Length: 133
Image (tube, rainbow, N blue to C red; front, side, top):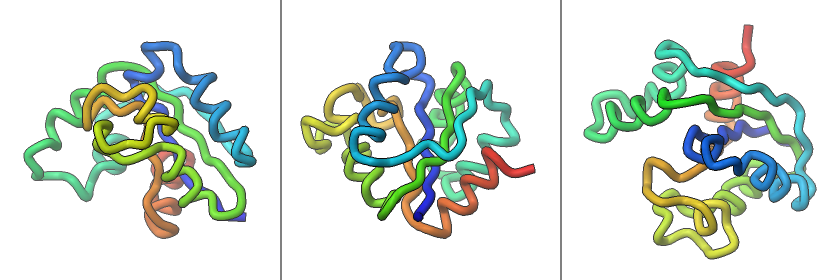
């Protein structure tokens, strides 16, 4: 069983989409291993987005992610990482397939409803950031 991290971002939480988003993952056979509601602090967000520090979009991304609560969850299943990324759709909502989460609900590249780990190493690190001791 592969595990991956998913963040349901503040824009989706504010719009009441948490249940619909979780439903899309579960209908594809993924199981929730862990789930937690967060009011994220700067330290946790900085650890999560460390790879983007110094990039032009970093400050805006941090501000957005700190704008409200989010839901973090660990999903598990066969090929969980690639399945989640397919369900999420392209980061650029304009390029996202119509039936994907971003294709259905996103309004911008930053406010795009969800985050999913992009590989095994990042999944392990991100799960530790959100669910580690």
